[in-house]
Image (cartoon, rainbow, N blue to C red; front, side, top):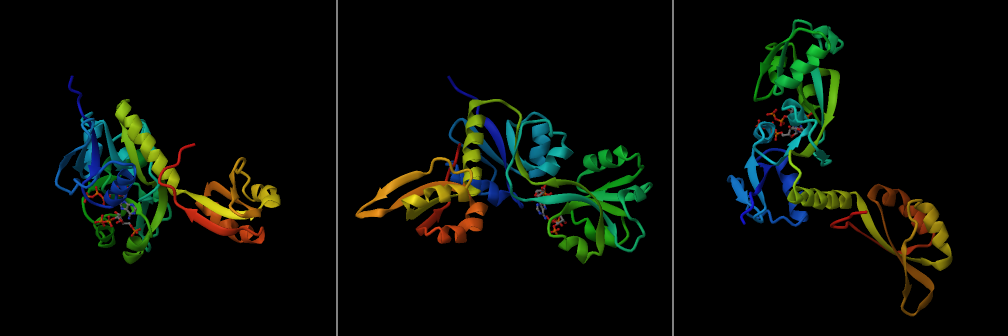
Length: 282
Ligand SMILES: Nc1ncnc2c1ncn2[C@@H]1O[C@H](COP(=O)(O)OP(=O)(O)OP(=O)(O)O)[C@@H](O)[C@H]1O
Ligand SMILES: O=P(O)(O)OC[C@H]1O[C@H](OP(=O)(O)OP(=O)(O)O)[C@H](O)[C@@H]1O
């Protein structure tokens, strides 16, 4: 019996591509054959197709894909927000409304009758309609900030990461619409997709944690548990030729480890090694 491959879109270029490929590679999907040249057959059950994220959003909305690596803003634009979605924690930005900093406007409510440039016409239409404002939308593919700075639009609906592009064009934020990041969105329930999500979950969770090994006096184990409240049952191992110390292995959040490192020292911990796990599932 032949099975139909489950088609997943990967970013063919742009900001999402490298991070998505890195997650897939760590999750054991060989990405060596993904070279920006189009389709890549996967393991016979999953087929990865390289597409612009925008096109992937449109294809997913049209029911032509099982899933896609896209972003919050693209999912909003194509009405995909109700599909099962896994945030990926990278390519974070804010979707904002911005206008020139000397135009006397103070919030988005000041834009009735205005011309708005955007890459996201549906999101923009819905946003202003929700406020009861009548605007003219100019859909663009290129840089929006310069267009607005030149007076060709009254405002833009665009992403802000560092704010550098807005500052360079003397624009300021009138309203934040919502935070955005890379996401995996799927349309189907399939075992291969559940497996992909589980593997990604393990990789993404592992990135936030550290596997810690250290030596400490046995009578300090309770104090160690108090330092890390989530640490109920660390692995405690004897050390060769040492009766005064034990080895302790445990997993903690990466942030928590750095916050507590000097406390660990004060507890008398030595031989501290922290590694990033490849996979972590509770
Ligand atoms: N400055 C940024 N900071 C963080 N994330 C961003 C930034 N710009 C874009 N992104 C995110 O990356 C996604 C893809 O953007 P990218 O520019 O790679 O593709 P695109 O806009 O579809 O490009 P093109 O239209 O040229 O194919 C966006 O939908 C957005 O979520
Ligand atoms: O707040 P910042 O860090 O400046 O990032 C925001 C900019 O990044 C994106 O554009 P991108 O750089 O992808 O290229 P584009 O201008 O060609 O759309 C976005 O459309 C903004 O223009």
